[in-house]
Structure formats: structure tokens, C-alpha cells
Amino acid sequence: MNLQGELNFDGLSSDTELLLRLFETSDRVLVKKLSNNDRDWARFPNKHQAGVYIPQEQREGGFFPELSVKERLDPEAKPIRESFFSTVWPQNGNEEKRSRLVHYTSKGPETHLTGLPKSLFCDLLPASFFLMAKQQRAGGTVFICMTIDSTSEEVAYLEDLLSLEPDFIVGEFDTGVVKQQEQEGILGFADQIVAAWQRGEIGLFAATSAKMPTTLELAHIARSKFMDIHRRKDINPFEMDCPGDALREISRSIEWDLFREYQRQERAVQLVRIVFGDEPKAFNAIEIMRRLTDALAEIDKLMLSASQQRKSRAGYSYEHHIEAMLGAALIPFEKQVVLENKKRPDFVLPSLSYAKRVKIENQQGLILSAKTTLRERWKQVEREKGDRDLYLTTVDENIPASTIEDMARINVQLVIPESLLSERKVAGLKNEYAGHPNVLTFKEFCENVVRPRMGFWK
Image (cartoon, rainbow, N blue to C red):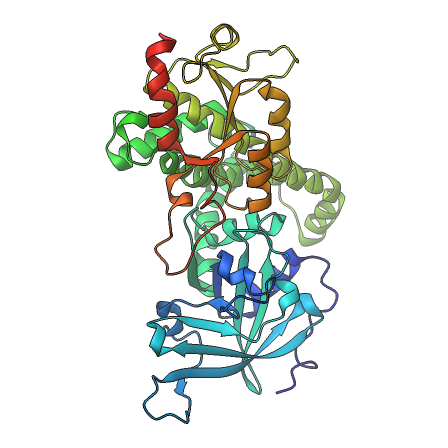
């Protein structure tokens, strides 16, 4: 089937526009967070997995064409079930591929999607995404595909659009349902905005009902919600099986959902005030169009401000929750103290004066640096370290093995949520944290590093 004339994605200036186009024109989409094996086949010739692993639920859920049994020369051989179909890759010049979904019954439920362009997978970092959009065309069903690197801005947009949780692995989404849920979330608050504007009280409404809490207030709200959900009185890490996972849930799931809702409400009110002002009056269609056109520059600034607000809030959020966790466990610490080299690490345990004074192994103080995402910023901690033990904690999934090895060379220990170090529930899904001696979970950090030293710190 030649789809080049029928499918045209030319003129799209970014992957965000492609993502939007796929959601606008497709009935269903399948999204998968890629494991090491899902990427390594495109980088290393010795890998047995020749594509993306598809779990049984998605294989048999109706998204893919039905599999048929392949004819084999050996009648005693275990059946191979397969299906061939067209995939189109706009990021690769609208390349059309004949892809294959194959289930080797001799390997249990293992199913692979093969016949994919290597160039779109070989350079992806850990925790990147693969998306397939299912569309009905004159010649039949076609799948439009794209990859989204975990360091790109499109990841935040995808996670926001589909409300993906931090532990998301794979899922199928009805785009109509997604749009309806988004619309319902907006319309309820829109009625309140309209009513406030018509009363001439939009300024008061903005200050009282559509105000973003401070990062400290929002962090407190998120922790309270976590403790309500899990019926806990505090977040003492010594009393939790997986304190790192708790930090991840609070900062990347609960607080992020709260933040998105507050920001949506705050920006909606600001947008109304930019375009229509604070005083209620009647506008005809021409006046509305003129006001929208005149306000474009301010609207652009508003959208840019929203994006910057998301980025700046994440780091402070993680620090607030770690501080609360240390406090709940009565772990002594000082925050943002100035070192000899004028650097300000996030936390010094138990205090800077102790860390300077005591050098005995397994008794000395340590530095705990917190970064929600690492990228190249982790190298800043080398200047904080000096001759002290330094532990860098993060909830970032997309750290390549080479970066972890670079940390080991300068004796930086990486502290991560427990679920990121363990095997995932989905077969064969591992990340790049395993097998590195300088990687430990937050639980291991608390029990094996902090607890033995606390007796000396007192």
C-alpha cells in the first residue's frame, strides 16, 4: 500500500506539532516507555531483540491486526504467530515500512514489533517514548509512528496530555476520551471565570480562587495528600519500605498533578484579563478578533512564563520533600550552607562544622545533593564535594550508563527510588541503573549510610 500521497506531514516545525497532529487525526494511540532492549537492538548488532517488546495485553487488545500462524517446515515446531502491516514515520521523511508483529509461542508471551527504522531508536536516551497512532485510510488501517527522546520538551507535553504517572510503562488511549476529559476539566472552571468577570470581580477571583500556592505550600499539600492516601502520620524513611518511591510519588505524581491544575486555572484567568480586561462589557466578533490579535505578544509571554514556571518549580519541590523526610526521621542536617569554595550544597549531614572536623571513615559527615533531573547539571556537584562523601539523589529515569560511570570516577554515589533499581514487572524491562556499585536506593542510603553514622553525629 503506497501511502505517500495520502499522508502528508510536511510543514510541521516540531515534534510537538506532529504529536498534536496525531492526536487530532487518530482514533487510538499506543504509547510505550522504552526499556534498554527496546533501544539497544538499534545500536548493537549482537542483540537478539530486533524491535520493540509488546506486552500480551496490548498484543491482544484490538489495537494491532489479528495474528495468524506462520507456515513452518517442521510440523512439530512451536507455532510462530505474526501479522504484517504498514507503518509511516514522519520523523524519517514520511518513510513507509512493512512492519511485523511476531509472537514466538516457544518463548511464552514474548512479542516483538519489528521492521522499524533504526535511525529513530539508536540515539534515544533511557526512558524515551515510542508512540503509534492508529488511523483508518482508504486502503485500510495504517499506523503513524514517532519516537520522543526523554530529554525533549515533548516528553513533558505527552505526560501532561495523557496524565502519565512516573511508573507508566505502556498503555493504549482513546483520543476522544482524552479530549473529553480535558474539556470537562476546563469547562467547569471556565464557568466560574465567566461569572466572576461578568460581576466585575475577576481581579478578586484571580487573587483568591486562581492563585498558585508557593512551592513550600504546594509541597506541604502534596505530602498531606500522600499521607492521607497511604494512611501515614509522617514520611519517616526508616519506617517505610520504599522511601525513594515515596519521594517520587509525592514530587512527580501528586504534586505535579496539583501544580498542573493550579497553573491551568491561574493561566486561564490571566488569559481572560489580557484579552478582555477586568471590566465587563459586550464584545462583537470583530472586537474579539481585534483584541486577540493585539494581545498576541502578551499571550506568548504568558505561555513562555508557564513553561519556565514548570521547570523552576521541580527542583525546589524535590528539596522540600527530602527536607521533610530527613526531619521526620530526626536526621540532623544543615541546608544551603556555604562551603570553602563558595558552593551551596542542598544538604550537609549532620552539619558543616562536624563535616569539617571529623574525618574518620564511617563516622564523617556527608553532602546530599538533590536534583530532580540530571542531564549535565550533575557535574556541578564535583565542586561541592571536596574530600567529603557526596551522595546525589534524583528521581530521573533517563541517565545513561556512561554518566553513572563518570560519577563513579569522581566517587559520587547516586541515590535513586527503589523501583528504578529493581526489575520492572513487565518481562525483560530493565533500566541502566543495575550493575553499578555506586548506585544505591534511598532506603539503602538511609539504612546503610545514615543510620550507622547517626550515633556518632549526636
